[in-house]
Amino acid sequence: MSLEQDTYRHLCEECQASIPLMSQAWWLDAVSLGKKWDAVLLRDRSGDIYAALPFHLTSRLGISAALLPQLTQTISPWFRHGIDSSTALRGLIDRLKSYSFSHLTVRFQLAAYFDEAQCSELSAASFALKTRHSYVISPPSKSPSELPSWILSNMCESKRRSVRHAQSSLTVSPVFDPSAFYDFIVSNLSSRGRSPLYGRELFCSLASAAISRGAGRLSVAVSPSGDWRAGLFSVSDASRTYYLVPTYPASSMRSGAMELLTFDSILSALSANRCFDFEGSDEPSIAEAYRRYGGSPVTYTSAEWFLAGSLGCRVFS
Image 1 (tube, helix red, strand yellow):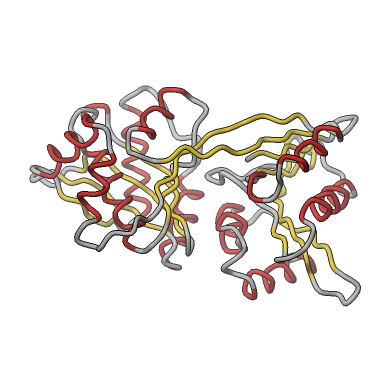
Image 2 (tube, helix red, strand yellow):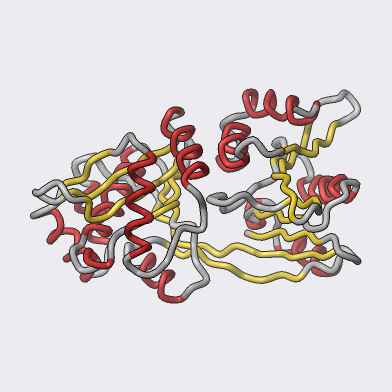
């Protein structure tokens, strides 16, 4: 363990509520599988940390690299409230330059930190800016008894019909065995001639860590005969639930099972006063499917920067 990693762990304990879920030390431990991760920290004159950015270390063909771990959509910087985040971000990137990486990838939601003027500054500093989209459902001012009908009323008719159809024949059940859930993922992808992009060890490590902290949920839609018709792995922090790994066999495509699980996860999130975040997609068909659940479109800025030579830094929303 490096000194900075140890310090970052303490920072996560101190500022748990404000550090993004996928930047938490326990998340990095789970997805690193014994490989290294570290963090760059910025301190003021008193020695207090005011900005931090963790990164995942790996090696490919003997070349050191800092890349996003699998099953990790973003690794975000943390800024102490009230500081100039634009200046702090530049400081974090400068600090990262001091490491000898062949490639470096960092992703976060720029919209949370930069206004239009600051994005213009980034563009002037050779950042390539793009726009990405997501769909988010925010908790409404409704009583618990009103939430189910409110969620359904915001869905398009086809999704609403699918949920109601599935409710008549399927039930939602939790799963506490990540390995069995992974087997289900493998089987579902195999039915389409595909295989998972991540291994059993990684999935089970993350799911087990998240569930043990009350930050993860494995759920399945079960038929009367006990067959699993769809599954969903969602993760949550205090303010948001993320739609991380949906899965279903090709034979269940028209059963409404996936729609039922999504409805159930949205209901669980809103009941806990959390937003439900589909994590977005630049794939039109997937984005359209998410839109039909009634989420509000959210736009993020994507910035990409390459240092001269082989070192690259990507900063995404």
